Image (tube, rainbow, N blue to C red; front, side, top):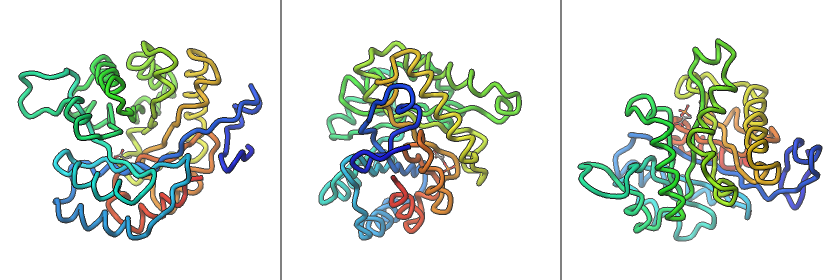
Length: 275
Ligand code: PEP
């Protein structure tokens, strides 16, 4: 692992190709269906008042409920470089008679730059399939919205030892129709389902092992140079206490954070833990 202009590049990169990347590092908060509008404003105020500096290659992203998108955008993007807002979902069709849904075009018209796609809660409770997620990814990319594409295995798959095949299939079925110049603009979040909201974090070794594997799957399909550009975030009970060690892993490029993103001091520490 070496540093280049403050960027830590992966061992795999250096050993295989000697390529130095400017891979993005991201601290992404996922508020899920939590907080009232006023509580959200207060939390943002507390986090923003810490004025954590994001370097050129670092982004902080707040994935908030739809009704809070504009408020969050004006709060965070006003005075803060490299702070962004994300939607937590979007519909897989462009527009039409889908009462209660929100389209990518609507997000684009509100100048939203990121969208979480395929969170395991959406896959599980709303029956989102890999094919549907491929449609969402395409729509986002057409609108210059960066998908934060979530993947990850349930406990039964981990116990059976087939997590690599399971997660690789999620990538292949939702992403591998994309040309290289599009996939390299994506962010991937590996979130083992057994670690989400359970307090049970994957060990640093388990996270690094899977991230390195996912990068090798991307490299097999698109080449090492493209694979090296794609940030892979870890999600699953990330908190202030474990973020520094997780983020030190060469292929872990930050975190997608649920529970701990609702506590200002926790999320501030996680932002500071970016490498
Ligand atoms: C998540 O919401 O994506 C998540 C990882 O939640 P938690 O950090 O609470 O496990």
